[in-house]
Image 1 (cartoon, one colour):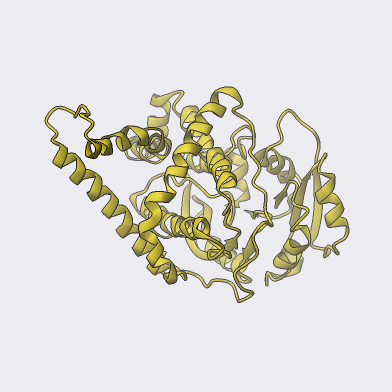
Image 2 (tube, helix red, strand yellow):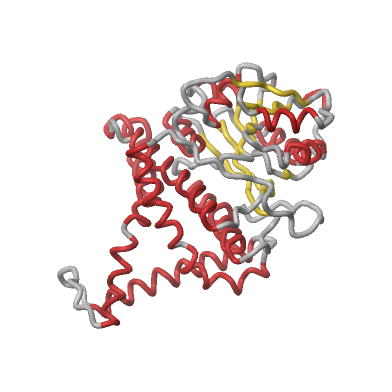
Length: 372
């Protein structure tokens, strides 16, 4: 569990992890701290750590990133299975037991298991509601679909578990990539490993402050840009490693992830025709056909999100699905911030502050999703 400036939730995370029902003698939890992170260190010093939980301090280095910290801590890990949680995570108590059972039932080429991420504060405000809908769509519809298509899976940064030997075989994480999880998913596929999705749920905090959301999303999009650029440095080698189908998947997943937001203003400009602007249209495309195409794309997006919310524990969010058209323009702002940082400060890790929004209630963890 990599931590950085997490003094507000350091004590709570100990209690959340203590609810895991896996045998303590076989559980090794490492809280990874940066050398200069005195605030989190002081907060943890006030908490009573169980014997199966220990602190690993990462020495100073050229970059301060989550993947660099995990690469350092991997040398001290004792387990055959390596799992990653974020500081604000609240995993289901039986999660580790189910992950271990799944690994035991699958061949060695299944090197990675990705769980479902959900939020414990979806009702905080409108932004958290939309974020919850987006997560439901990604983890309950999109990722399972990509897996069924046989594409390389862009991993999430938490509730992801690896066979240690496979993780070491691909060289661990890219210390300079700010979405090290997505990059690692591609590298696992390039080495012939398979990622599977498992119906185990971890709740975390939905970032529900507009500028903080933009900063977080800009880091994710910058990481996708870096990941695509790194693996496309040698397209022929990538094609040889993945094959034509998975190579196509990399383009569809990563290239479209940031290009759709970078090009969104161009599409929005066509709505100005309603104000009388005589915008140029592509050859052979009428204004009516263009408007129809826009509306069809929006309808498909809404239907997919509705299906995702129905599969989730958040059916009360269905009335908010149509408001997503106001939510996603924030990602366009984040995409341009990411593009600028890619040129000016590519390895900068825009830290997301946690502990800013309390859970909606103190109920039990969200149950597993049998639809995955």
